[in-house]
Image (cartoon, rainbow, N blue to C red; front, side):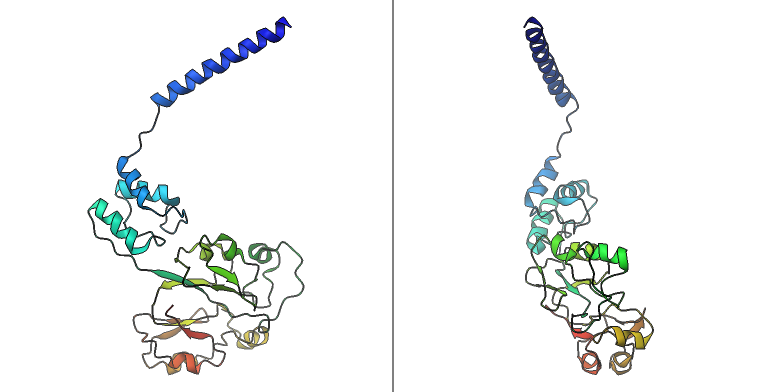
Length: 266
């Protein structure tokens, strides 16, 4: 019994001594918070999405206070937050609203499957293990990795097995684009009127594209030949539209035989 009491007393004394030591070191080595960073952080929405290029809102606020970041990087807060940050920092800030879209139309009735996939239900896992779930090596696997990482509930799986992004909820944070192993998600300026290719198949063999996916770009270059502004070129087997030259006239959209091109402007 005496041994138990001595052990308990020793444990209490040790805990007390450690508590005092921790309190001492906390005071001595405490990192003082920058009051400007704290004020800036209070203005941020707290989404911690990383769209600004920094590790969360705390990292962005610290960078702003240090003068190593611009005040217009918060896509979630938009122009309102940018103006508040700019007012606090004494600078002008203008945000270009962004929105994302999925550049794949490999729907269930359009794109042929490789076979029955029985692995981990993840786009990244399917890509690593067997190159994806479709014969089109660039097609959407359809497991919704992008849906899982979206902080704003802006993405849902469409009835055709390809994710659909709700432009009203999308903030253009690009988390979905970073997560997609097929690099199928594009981010553009919100409201930008431009023709956009909704296919990412870079296979140069036209016959294979048509065989594997009925809605893939077959490299016919009808869009290139018929563009009145001559602002479309083929790059890596996909139409590339120069946004400065495109007037959203829709001629290329109408000429595309597989309806790969669409006009944006969400």
